[in-house]
Length: 99
Image (tube, rainbow, N blue to C red):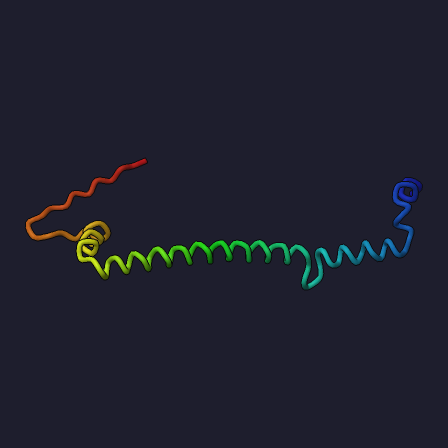
């Protein structure tokens, strides 16, 4: 008991004790606790990164769509590469390279 009194004298002060209890309450138990706020902020940052990625992706896809609508050669190239379409009397060989 004597060690407890000597090692933590600041806990005998009721104001510091009240502040410590308040801090612990805000940190972990409150509805808007700091841990949940941190996790929410992290989630928001990730969503903002995703938003930037998808906006860039939309821009790329829009330019690609415009190219496909305006040029038939690009449309044929896209159909051959993506959907493996072919002309009559033509064979397609698919070679898969494993890394």
